[in-house]
Length: 63
Image: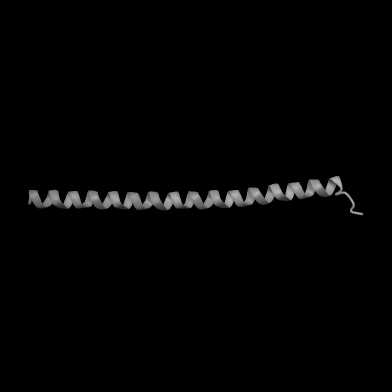
């Protein structure tokens, strides 16, 4: 006959499951944060290039 799982073992398995899910969720959140930062940097770089192009075009008109 199968023995029922002891309450302590079931609690430990539940805690380990919660810990594993927490670690995986934190990993995904960290990766998403990193991707957002990279996208923000790309956007700022593009804006800086547009601004520089505008300044150069303006300088050509003035000179």
